[in-house]
Image (cartoon, rainbow, N blue to C red; front, side, top):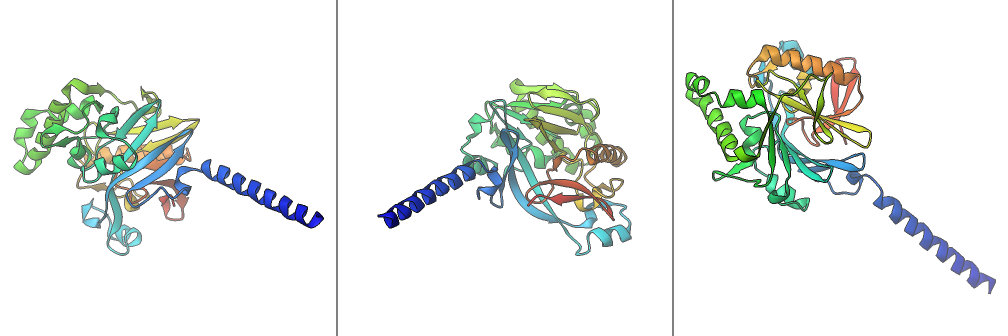
Length: 308
């Protein structure tokens, strides 16, 4: 009889242990639950999460850099190419579903569907700037993809891309970018919110849980965003850095995509100097999967260590 009681007790303990393990698993951060793939990555932030929605992974080569010394290129890009991407970030804050940029639009709607979200359910879209690979997912066949979304863009950014005189003075190839930006402004005109971002030391709340930061140079109104939830922070630098392998340790090096390379370098150095002291997770639109990481000081200088 004692033998059977012992077996029963052991089985009961095993059952309780199994239930405890299942409870612990349900409380684990999203990225440990196998929900990530090559296009989606979940990062817990307080009681919510930031979700990478990748519009595709790619590589860049140093030809995109402007006046980069050969010794720096050899040191940081020894294979002749570096990982890059087209990234979008989904924020779930204060009961709202928020996108930061829209990428090229390659995978955006499909990735949102994987998260159980339709285009109609997106409440807010925050733009870092209006280059085509950041606004490409906002329109399809001349119609806005997100009919209910409020669209936030810095005032200086809209002023630049809607300047018809400036547009006419540029080569035809550059004028197409203006036309695309103007189409977005027109399509979302009843949902458009213009604002003036402040310096990183004086950043102010734009919407609940998100602050905007002026980081001009890549484009005239380029904006970064600080996301805050549950006492945690997450910084999205947009295209402040296009080629992180080189530009994080050497912010003085610009890319061909910068409209004002000198100002872009100043903004980049200033923001990186501030971020280095914060120890927070950072993310960018051209950071390879998972699109985010930690800034760490190495013997070669400041570098970005991608999250696993």
